[in-house]
Image (cartoon, rainbow over all chains, first blue to last red; front, side):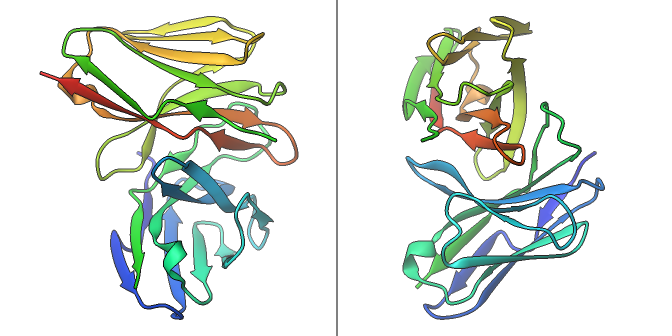
Length: 115
Length: 112
């Protein structure tokens, strides 16, 4: 069974704090993704990575950075959290190789509240 | 720009059919997907369709694709209370590195 785990289900932080969200997958997937989910906006891609130490910006990268030092782990960093970053954050992973059919496997999400 | 649109809410009675609609814009999409998100959980792949097909059936699920109109639909036959969830359509785009563009999600509520 593919498993994607996220370090926290719920997180409460204060404005200006540095926040780390961790994601780990156990299927040796090349690709990993970070999305945020907001009501009425669906899922929006923040960053993704197709290999260790490689990263690409998604649609809404501002205010975020990422780190992929090991293949199984992809971290999302909020350098200085702001209230408009209160959201549900979802991590996903998939096989690479440029295959057109490519199922993404999702973690359970982290609900982040920034006060 | 790339955009995937869905209606936000749908309410049906148990036993009826549900139809969830989606429109997309990227004509280079090779695969289109339907994902389900149950309360408090991440997304799970329900089904997918290759862009040169116009229909795919999988038990209670029927996917219809109208490539000319860029319209995708998911029909759930004999809808059950366990089908209550948020349903996302997504298009796989081959512009640059392969990734998905997700729709806004449709919250399906099944009334007993």
